[in-house]
Length: 527
Image (cartoon, rainbow, N blue to C red; front, side, top):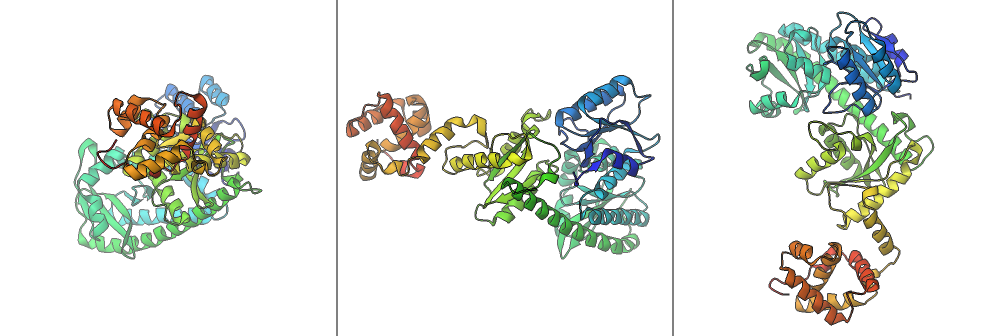
């Protein structure tokens, strides 16, 4: 648990801002997140119930936290805490934290976030120090511009903000507490061409007021070596005059240096995490135990696709970025023996997102597949203990091997749902050279190559689709009678009885073993 902060330590560091109402014991906090029913929290999260207006809302937040495996809920005191709410929290093992009177959510989030960051492993204190310096620079920028300021990265994640944020619009408050600019707000600024201009120009951008009470803003790009690495967003009624922009230049330059430093530290932390995960997946003593925020259940998911010619480390970094963009707060991604894998809490598969109506992990891979058809996730079986991850890794690797030869084609497959392919794949693997034994397929392969017929393709597809002529015809874009004709001719050429169960089993195993390219030898217009 040296990567997490105990509830007692958190309360001590945030004394005067929050107070512990219910402590079920043994609670540790890894991160501070916003309560959002459409994006469930994760293990070790302290959830800020910003929308809870009464005790009923607090109880609903506690129930959501329990369903997602979160550690604690922070809520504004709505009258006196009742015993029913406390009992519900104790029943689920959820800590309940109350805000001090008069505390703003943005202030609470900042204090709690800094407390968790400063209580992490070796190296985290440096990151916390860098982040605190960034907050101080945001305050300086706010003084220069006489306006509330946020510092954001290129993915619209909030890295720091200035004082008096509660005086801005609701969109900005939601952005700060949620640490991410809401999609609707990003879409508004993208439609105004803001991000396009930030990538190509050093000039500040003034954006007029928008729908839904979005106040006007001045956006100042932050660059390092010509590369756009973030932006300073200030709520201003009009474009900032040149004299103030000149004063701001030095502050922006210092912010740029801090962003570069934070990037470098994040890269080092990610490398350290990847190495620890790799050790755990290989079953090495002490591997990655501290990064596990709970005792499971867990799965190892092989991540296929993107550019397989890339170095595994580079591909791991790319997958990390893609999963973060898809909403994963802390993806556990590493490379193992040239493969890229993720360790996923089972709740990623079982907790539904209300907004999508789909399983989060499946929804993630479906969305990534829409952009890159080669993307697939192959999930090994669940394990209850971190020490059992090597078993799930082996299962995931077995599914990945089947996917690479085209036997598993959906965006995501799970071990328990792929038993048929696994059984046949193991039978084929236990008989090396199955496609070289001879028999009917050897005859048909030679005939197809010599005459341009499609008997191997048809027979292989027929077995693959449950020996259904109708399904085979649809898959091959031919009439059902054409399928039946080809099956009859194949039987005549080889002298086999396709009604014999032993013959069908042997042929189906050989068809499974055939590389798919060898089954497609037909010339157009031939039967």
